[in-house]
Amino acid sequence: MNKKPPRISSFDLRAGDHLSDKYEVVSRLGSGWEGEVYLVRETGTRIERTVKIFFPRRNPGNRALRFYARKLHKLRHCPVVIQYHTRDSFEFKGAKVSFLVSEYVEGELLSDFLKRQPGRRLSAFQAVHLLHALATGIEAIHNVGEYHGDLHTDNVIVLRHGLGFELKLLDMYSWGAPNAENIQHDVFDLIRLFYDAIGGPRWYARQPQEVKDICKGLKRSLIAREFRSAGQLSQHLEIMEWR
Ligand SMILES: Nc1ncnc2c1ncn2[C@@H]1O[C@H](COP(=O)(O)OP(=O)(O)O)[C@@H](O)[C@H]1O
Ligand SMILES: [Mg+2]
Image (tube, rainbow, N blue to C red; front, side):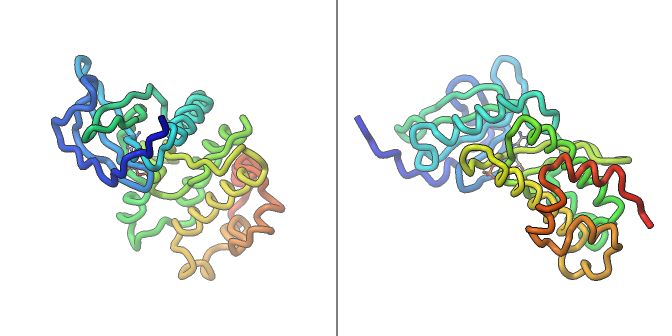
């Protein structure tokens, strides 16, 4: 039987709704192209978890879910990556819908954190700390030959912000098998995130040389020449000197 997946574009679950008999919805955390993300509580234990429910059309043959689950599992020893728990399914309007269960990370989305900074941007000094936390976190991913694939401020959670940043990454994207190009792409996305965090094009000309030595005017070839992986970028930050 080769039935077409049903066309579902929203689940719109409410607090108190149940997913199978195992999880109770607490609130919606986000919704995107692939599906919707909810904070849930495991019935019986009351433990909080996050579920990502896939729109069947975005997850034919469970491919999207399987990719994400396997990648999270492979990266389970990388402290920056959220922990995968299990997969499950529930019935929605007569269709069987799959979801992925991961740990719930309590913190603030990096995009929200940046919005509430004075002038909606970080100082160069703070941003270097942010970039360093991201680069060292992603270094562990690159070291096992993997890549993230979708680094931006809505996929980073700030757990703690003090002398430095403690972060968690979510939501990876598959551009196919890992290779040097995918890893290079992560490095570029990291530097662009840094560039945006310090105010983007409006403030770039006024940034100190140390910042320009990192951003290189966002020229991909220049960035690729010096930083081939997140590890090389974090190393650069560790030995750089403010003039
Ligand atoms: N494990 C998690 N813990 C806490 N919040 C999460 C978690 N996973 C996702 N979120 C929230 O849900 C939003 C959407 O989840 P995400 O996995 O990025 O899916 P998508 O971008 O495909 O909708 C995130 O931006 C974040 O705010
Ligand atoms: Mg996302």
